[in-house]
Image 1 (cartoon, one colour):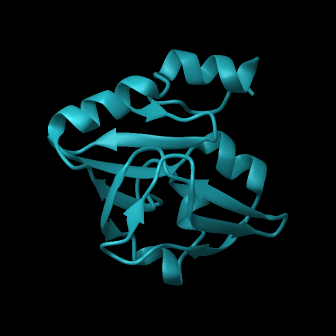
Image 2 (tube, rainbow, N blue to C red):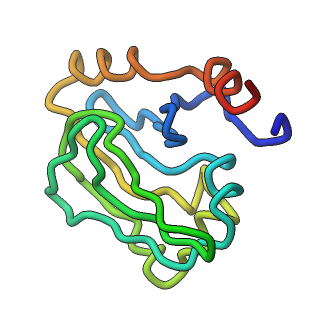
Length: 134
């Protein structure tokens, strides 16, 4: 699937989530173009509440499509600081704009060094391309 969009400015997980750093301790998270394409038409997104704890590798949200229900796993430790409320009325934004209006949550890490460490442990764009093309 070499035609999948993989922006170089983002970080990625092997579970097909993208991570965009918004500030010293804050990131925005969503699912990749590859993931939304594999899921098919997204019909429902279950997001956590503001203030919910996120743990690396543990499910914190679900994306339901016409094909299946997929867990979204924590890419880093932190607390949900914002959820994309637009997905309640328009879950299809995950399909039409996965790196923009289709974002899922924003997560606040404990501190900048913790976030730096977490981001250092996930994939860069080239490594993620190798995962989806390999």
